[in-house]
Image (cartoon, rainbow, N blue to C red):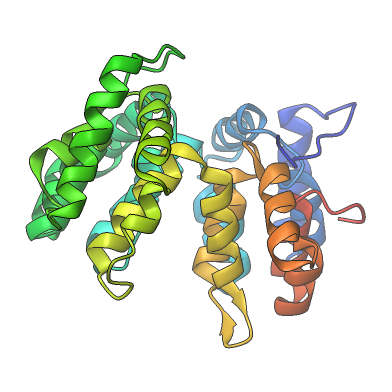
Length: 316
């Protein structure tokens, strides 16, 4: 469930562009006006605003935002303004260029999106970077990480609800045997996680739990410091219960040691139109603090206002 709030009567794209132009003119930028428009428009409306702005003022709205805004506020507004597929392409490219073995952004894009959304992100990657996501992932990663991530980002899973229970039983056994042998990067384990439909993987992992006594992710915690195991657990979570995965990312992003603004921004902009309401419920259940209170406590100014607007805070 989305937390995006769109007014009952939405102004035309031309009117929105005129207001945005006003927000950029004069001595200072009117950040509140920018938030009141962009934080309350859906993806199709934002796309129309960008097109109309370019046609009317012969300028790319994203470049204007880049010039007018700064820091975390600039990043959240620009990422939000991008078309979802373009945004995923941008985030994936950033993740490959800054690749570290603890970076789970590629797993999020490969596994928490629908097969069609991943395909659109890959097409957007071609258009923007003049190469494929797969070749960049292959170039920037090594070893077991490459063995897992290249097939994940290359996948086009079946998206139906059907599940073959005989296959689930067989593949649960294959997964368990490889985990027992600590063969975590075995080709069969990766093949199952990278190619099966989400419905089939859910059936397989339910069978795994029934047959072998606990969740697969508990068995993948043999060494908590092993970053490849962490990526495997993230893969399983993004495929089977993305709301719990993103709830945890938010919990780790907003903590006593300081705020991970990149993680916080990424989850809010990529999930606000998808399942942020469910993520908020998961967050509250785990932390006994509402997400908007946690955001308000850890962030400031226009960045805070934009995040609160996107997460459906009443006053934003």
